[in-house]
Image 1 (tube, rainbow, N blue to C red):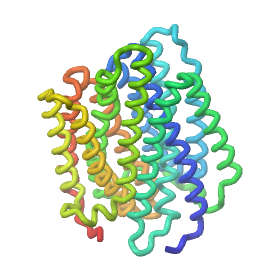
Image 2 (cartoon, helix red, strand yellow):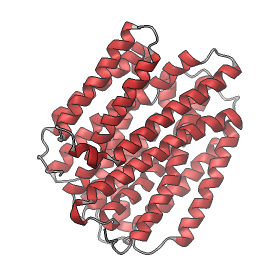
Image 3 (cartoon, rainbow, N blue to C red):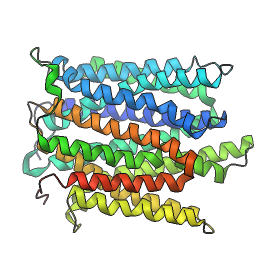
Length: 408
């Protein structure tokens, strides 16, 4: 396929986004495991990520206007720089602080990291619509490739974070990531190829709210879809596996960190690879609408919840296998959503509509994060999975409002 002008800039943005997501995944695993070993409860652990998700909602609402006003280069540079600041701020955490003070401090730093992530995401996702080849129906393939590779890299970050925590500790891991990201920022700032669109002085903030009903219904379906993932993913599954794999000793903790990090990494990498191949996989499925795919996906956490509640012997392989099935089906759902938002928008409104759509994405993660800690504390992993099934049912109902598309 031919490559349009600016394609080199698209590749540069994508590479920088990959580097960012590696540190984002590593940071999430570092924070979760480090503070769990310090005695934080599931709800307290969820609090650590709440401001991260709230910041994502606000940032995505504003990022579309910022990108339209100041250009995609600006949002990319700002995202990388803020992530470096957030990492360095975490090195100032004092172990003598009270739990309340620690939670508040880490919440604020994670909030800054949430702003950083969604600014960087805005640049990469908008660049697909504007700069990637789109002839012969290839937009879906490029969207799937970007989102799939991003998630695979973030999955690798989970493993990197767990490995760094077990080898050089929390402070050393943070400093290592800050140094690596600083090198990336310097490289893209001085070597960014031409091609990304500049800002438009006439861009109005009020335009971030979409008047396209398809964009609005898709965004609402996205809220429930990502809430359904994060309600078991953010807190529940890591604490569940920690209880199974650690005996409480330092050596047991180190082994549990490695196993949890390996599972989380493999799950997200697997999910990313399936997402990258979603266009071909979806073409072979009898169900191709966002509504029907979400309805089928809801059966997976519901079945897993019943299995965990029954407490059958040797349950762990069933949980892992079921979550991998969830990951594959979720990846296809997510890739279809990511294609649909670019299909429904226009080149003139792409940063605005993508920002609004990812605001909904962040709202779903926020909802899932809050429910993850609360659900696990009230009913363990089975309740987390049950809530996930309910949210997927709501996503399926909402997506029924979307038009049918020929994805062949």
